[in-house]
Length: 134
Image (cartoon, rainbow, N blue to C red; front, side):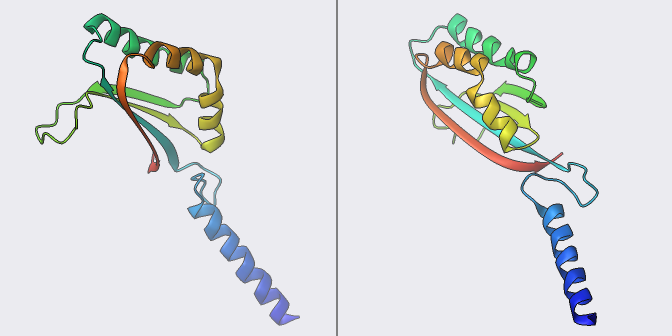
């Protein structure tokens, strides 16, 4: 009986630890301590006009008001002095609570409409997702 209770305690402790370290970022207390960052980097085609690039920026920046699973958004133009951007000029970071919220964003009609705006104006796109502390 004592062994069974010890085993249950070990399993409970391991479960609590796994919940604390889970990719969804939920601590043992149930509070989210992490967010999923979705990074999008663009190199625009040489023929894309400044007005067309601005239309892409404006359309992307409008998504947080249209898609409620987005919990954070920021964007900017590359200002790195290192010269290693390989022509990527614009970056966007969209944050989500979990993978399900990110996946809902990817399938959302507003995201699909945005992709229609950007797809013929970009020469290269890199998408990179990672977990970060809030």
